[in-house]
Image (cartoon, rainbow, N blue to C red; front, side):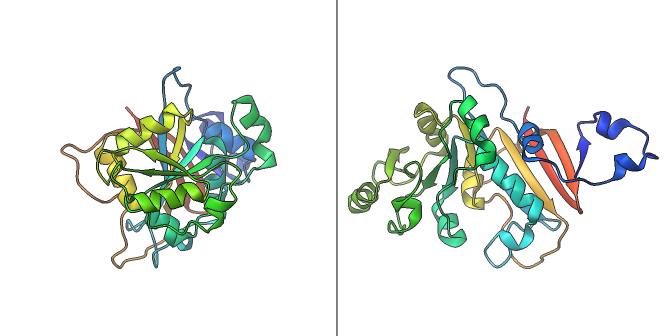
Length: 263
């Protein structure tokens, strides 16, 4: 892996030096430093998204992101999870990707303990209908209780089923749907301030429309998919496109691992 941006002593030395051009596998500590959350104010929170896209803009292939991903992308995926307090995900993505509870990872145990975090991030599922299988391990055997984020008018029977399965229900909307900006605040109020969303595209689009997204970590996969696959963000458009600033660009085997932050 090579760092392309920001320019450091790794990228500014003479390109004639073969050592500067050689790829090497970064340690998990190096990845954690590259993707560290910014320092937050006492009442602050930070929502970052982690998505992957092909060169022609496909966020999925056959309904899943795995076919357009790669080994290093998955290492970064695991690192981003290990740094977060909570992983926020849409119900459709939970169903399609077969979500399981986040696991504790020894490589990040000391870092999480020093940051006052538990052994693993919580998973927060955003859903209006609560059309979820509450017998899955995501709900029955997580290290920390899974959160179900929904609206005040969500089906009462499904809410009761979620609670019975051990999930914590977070109300973030007055109707059946979820106010995504409020969801960010409600999670932060529970101490879950370092937030990571893994989509899907519909949920990410809602965060963008609500101007709730602080950072986008986007892997650009060196693949072409064609077809009618979704982009990384869908749903309603914004009045004026949101401008972000590049924070980091890494490269390995043709994959670009980028991070853009709110200006």
